[in-house]
Length: 230
Image (cartoon, rainbow, N blue to C red):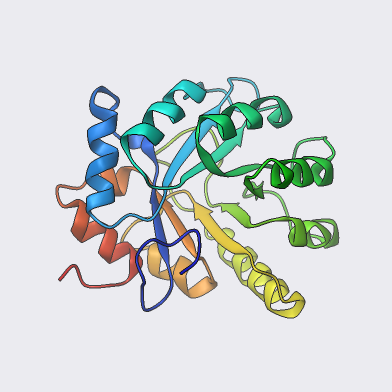
């Protein structure tokens, strides 16, 4: 059993519902419901209104979610200064913390400091960002790598297939370099795109509106994972 998968699955794929699409008026109950439905993690989209033009959750919300539900919190920092935000979310109960490669910061330093602080650290790339040797050099410092299949900042966008060859490349690098690395995809993951993401090498599927917009949480979590609900 890996840290990112609560339920043993034949294909090893985990499902991380994004609470951005949950009913905020009953967030605790929503998180408990997807846990009962078989979800493995909870994905927390953190936006600062600068790196992306939207605002979402602060550490106090993460702390409340962590108190209401014992699933690992997978915090995706879409912020200009992740080094300032990350310790607050880790203190609030985050398990994994990812931040963007596109930022002009010392990625290595932050990855190392997050690991020293007890987090599962990782990087994120946007749809327009190519993979290169600089990213490969940082993978040994990552426990998780998130490939965006939509432009960050808003939910409900359509899936961009440019993410699939990136997952394939990352899977190749992971195998060649013998890394213990979870590959995650976020954006437009639904019944049609989940099989494509699984085939390309995703270990974690982030899905917001598809999960929380469903009337059958257990059924959709199982379907995204590639299993029968029964």
